[in-house]
Image 1 (cartoon, rainbow, N blue to C red):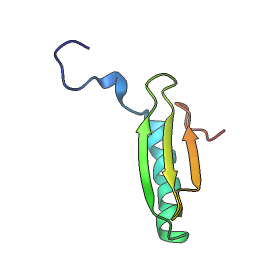
Image 2 (tube, rainbow, N blue to C red):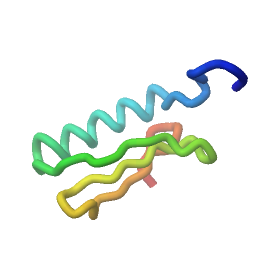
Image 3 (cartoon, rainbow, N blue to C red):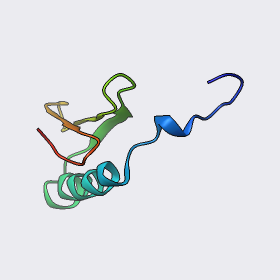
Length: 68
């Protein structure tokens, strides 16, 4: 990575972002649940999210946009 502040390899894929948008929409506008954390796992490249009033909702989105 060197001296750069941003590395494009640390970006989620287009498929992950589309899936994340759909899930976040459902969580916030349909289920009225807060989203506490969204991050990209550098090892697996999966997007991880933590949501719910008691942080009881967890999900990961694979690089191809699937939720296992």
